[in-house]
Length: 589
Image: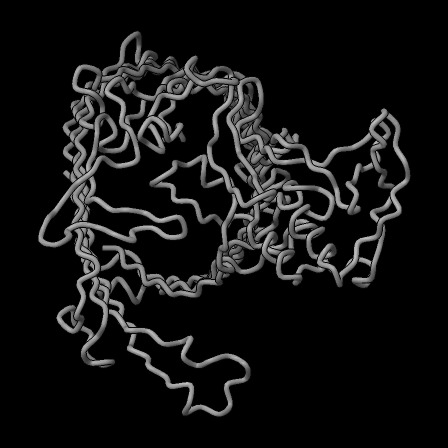
């Protein structure tokens, strides 16, 4: 049995500010009254727990002169997750500062409570047959019943099988190849939905305006009201199912001083559960649905080495590499055009959409692109500005990395260990609103093109209307606003594609120093180990040459609201990432 419990209490206070412009002489061109605010107190309390019950039975025996091993496990798992949260906020403080209590506010602007509960019951079993400690055949099976799926479709079954052969049992012992194993596996994995996605959910009623949200909300004049949320649930929701085939090999040389593990996999996911946008005429903004079929295949490689080892010193060094290709095999027939928007941003010409499109990699970016002649010359209008197409087009860019990798190293001297880890991501794109705004404000270095003097877009032409083109001679000026428009409205000749940045990076992810206290000290305290670690996370980041704007891992998209895929879209006004320093104390009994 296991029980994990967490609670938290948050309180935020902002003082009342009431400045009089007439009393301030040096305002530096900015009226101090712009900083005035009524002040508020915000409080939030939440708790969550996860409870597990596991019952396991085991049977083992040996047959045929103890060459055949039989091992059987069977069990039941019961899991419950619960969370609750209460939030309140009051505005217009009576005491402008120092009294951070909800009763200090004249207006109760927020009062809400949320609760979520999920239960899962699973029956599972596995059978392992081993022959002469050399060949192993393993079968697994599990059936789950989930409270988050429709009542008549709330159980799902997923089996698996693995065959492995330790071939070094057949060759003489040697110091070069000390261990070798090949494996072949096929299995399925099931997954349920988040809570409350199978029907209509209700929220306290609000009214949104064109430039703001929640401009009016209930309770109002002593009357309360609820309305259906903007996400439509699905009473026909099915469990998500992933089938995977894998073949791999593990080799160990020189008694583990050098090891290699390589695998090829082919993974197909069917009926993925996603929250997707829908036409507002349905009365909803989003719907929960099962999402076609997606295939991923690729290779994974891990190298482990110990280049140097003495009595008191050890250096471990490991490398990992993975390359994955994915493709959307099919989408629900109800989707028109064979594609669906995962996430998007739209502000005039700066409109970027990320789609799942049948026959293409997941997360394909679409935007308004400029027009070119067959020879590749940009076509401009009478004002010398690029002409963008009136419909969004495929940029040929997507969210997926070409490959990922990592390096981990650790130096151990007696009781001290200094370790570091690097992460590498190559390829893939993301939308950056930060870059977009830097062009808008003129802070992006690209806006210094030609020293901000007048210029004609290089190699641009004007459409004569008869199938021919003339050389463009209309310059872009700063004094009439056309220079600003070129960078802000036309993506400096690239349309919305200008704001898709390469998400490649190299990160020094972590550096840590650990001290394991001497055994003779801790044995006197009847403990097995005490260690102290100081660390720094997110130490350094090196990005692609076209991305000096944002951390490629930054996202402002809510995973809870839009799903995992949507978080790969990019960022809207993300804050710079921070280094994190800390210290850990570990005590083992």
